[in-house]
Length: 254
DNA sequence: GTTAATACCTGTTCGC
DNA sequence: TGCGAACAGGTATTAA
View 1: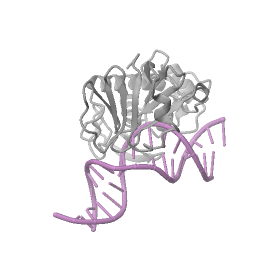
View 2: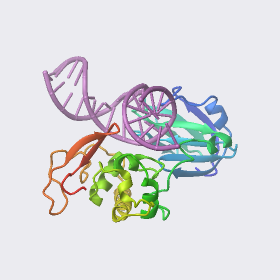
View 3: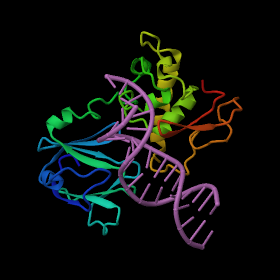
View 4: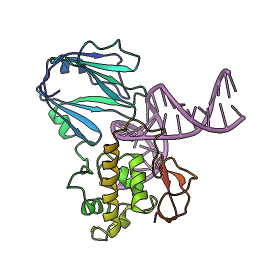
């Protein structure tokens, strides 16, 4: 998409999860994509107009790229970008949990979610020290801290649960317990930061990110089943934390 | 300032 | 079989 220009933008409804900004299509049309990047779970397109197109797939969103005439849109094709290079980019989102926004430089800099994002989990900037520093002093649970995008960017419920299980850490323990009073990493912070990287790298390698149900995890969605930790013999439990399902083994996750 | 709870949305699954 | 309730996800918003 880099270098391509929006020749036509079609909105097939006025909103996704939230309304499109005013004059969305008009402000995009004629601008060129200077760079397309990702930050946390956001897709970010820097535009020749100076604005920034921010896109989020929610949980069921997907882009389809057609190099020739696209098929007739179905009822979940919500946005159609026709590009100067001939590509037609269609955003499809059955559950409509995604969203798009078009930010001026001023609004981008002041964006409360984007500007406060923590480090990318697969980057060198994310390690035990960074994790411990972010968790130190927090009053919330370790699980809730992992879902806080200011602590680590882009981790979702399933992989937070999987990483805690792999690290042998209880999701219920206070986040601050992985750090010393001075914010230095305890052994738990080393195990957890490594587990997060492992879980994400394996997920990327599998390239099956769209399949949630039916996919087998080590602990997620396995309530009542045997814990898979070697030599554990425990049973997977389930509970709700901050409105999201947590799966864990009380025997091997401390 | 921090943390928790709610709203948003609809395809799928579950229980009666 | 059919129907309605519950559920899942991430973030913006509101409340505590």
